[in-house]
Image 1 (cartoon, rainbow, N blue to C red):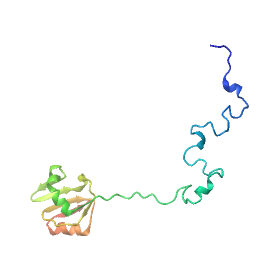
Image 2 (image 1 turned 135 degrees about the horizontal axis):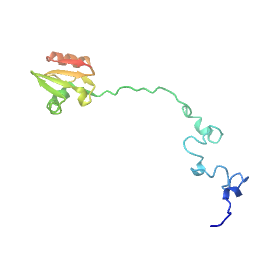
Image 3 (image 1 turned 120 degrees about the horizontal axis):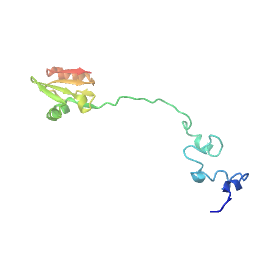
Image 4 (image 1 turned 90 degrees about the vertical axis):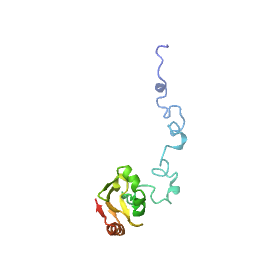
Length: 145
């Protein structure tokens, strides 16, 4: 080991770029200027004409809605799936009525397509008017949670 060897950067004092040429060359992302929106005209004019056409390049616009996703099931499908629902403990039979909790199967809305042939008590977050009427006509009820 040589004694008294000084560091390279002390020999490059006042050289402005420390041997890397242009100021922009010694960066982690090469010659492209960076990542994302760099070089697009935020500070300089280099790529400004290419972003003038885009309305929402800088800043934020619009609404961010967090709507509840509707996962619906029809009465016809529900009657068809009834044996499976009983096996999976999402439904129970009690005195000739079927107690069904649609939340356990991931449904949050009941729709009225099909005929209700069995008496069902259905717990669900929401239901269409036709679905409620169809279930009531069959002797059941819809409990909205």
